[in-house]
Length: 69
Image (cartoon, rainbow, N blue to C red; front, side, top):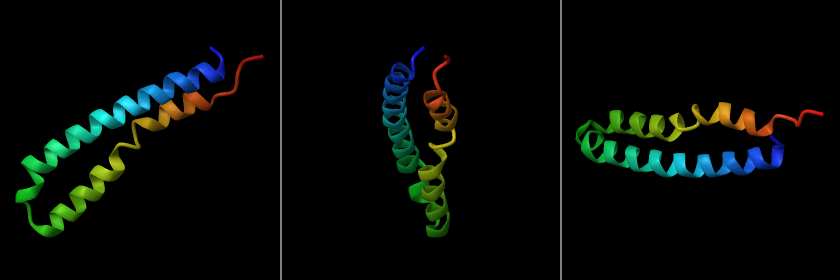
């Protein structure tokens, strides 16, 4: 598969993933995190803000792989 096509597919997957992740994180924050103490809220929001990157790493590696000659 050419790199250009992988980049297009990966971009669409990332956009869908971020949209779904944002909705899930927002629902989680509204249901559970609001009731927690301020320090726990701070760490929870920091964690939610960073965790979405972890599943994206393999996809980015796949997208940026060079074409086979």
